[in-house]
Amino acid sequence: MGAIASARKETIRTGRMDHTFHYASDRQSELWLDVHRAHSPAVNDSGVIDIYRRLFNKIAAQQNSAPVHVIGLGCGGGAKDRLLLETLKKAGSRIRFTPIDVSPALALLSASVSREWCDEPLHPIVADLRQFPKLPKALDPIDDGAARLYTFFGMIPNFEPDEILPALRGWIRPQDRLVLSANLAPALTESAADYRAAMEIVRPQYDNPQTRNWLTRVLHDWGLESLEPAYSLRIEGKNGLLRFCANAGTMQLFFSYRYTPERLHATLAAHGLALGDGFVSPSREEGVWIAAPQRN
Ligand SMILES: C[S@@+](CC[C@H](N)C(=O)[O-])C[C@H]1O[C@@H](n2cnc3c(N)ncnc32)[C@H](O)[C@@H]1O
Image 1 (tube, rainbow, N blue to C red):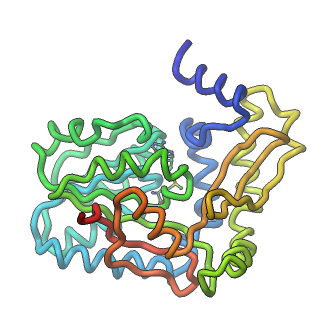
Image 2: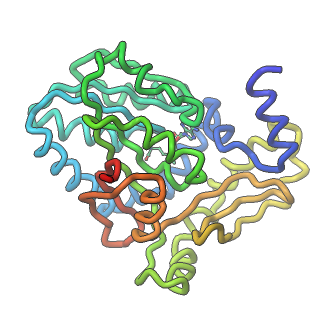
């Protein structure tokens, strides 16, 4: 049995859909881009775009015009990586860029929107990050082991922390850097009550026709469309965190954790990563930070 057929069988056995099914095909990528354009604060909120600009300026100043290899982990449409490359390039760095995504269409889209800021040939990679423990070795032939700047934008919410953070921590060598962002629950304080109330504020970003259309399309492809009328979106607690969960009857289609800054710090620290400089948007709905392996 091929890898896709066996992942599908596993989804049906466990009642949990692997998120990569929501992105991997060209059509799924298009549907996700529709959701992203309509509902992502990074597209529609200038206060969010501004925090990326501010942090990228800081990174460019630290880079001091040295050459840089940027690796976009789960690059999506590539707009944030593109802004980073543009900022680094304008500050005088020579740029190499490697977008990586489970979706071939998104890896290629990201490469094409970034091309004008790159000095070296682009090598888009299509891969499942959860199955790529040797990622740094795979990059060696591309950059001869040069220092790397990994980006991990908007990715943390869609993984169980244990399923990606150990790998991410393992990829960062002492000479490398990591910049990551997360969609946040815009809580006024870190209290449990404020955390839950904040989830309701961002619910419309998930509870909308475009997201439902995106997340239920796979059911139609698999002949499981009879499950669609049982679609629901709810807020669920897990290990002290809250997340949005889209289900179709008993099948979990998707989840998205919303962290608060403190909860994000704690989750990363549990996996040996520390947040450094960063900014949270005025809406408190998104934050972006430089991160690094913790010093012992
Ligand atoms: C929420 S989007 C974030 C996209 C982009 N970084 C941004 O901030 O706009 C998640 C992206 O990660 C990709 N992705 C999801 N799971 C993945 C996996 N296991 N391995 C590689 N890419 C994955 C999806 O195809 C999608 O492009």
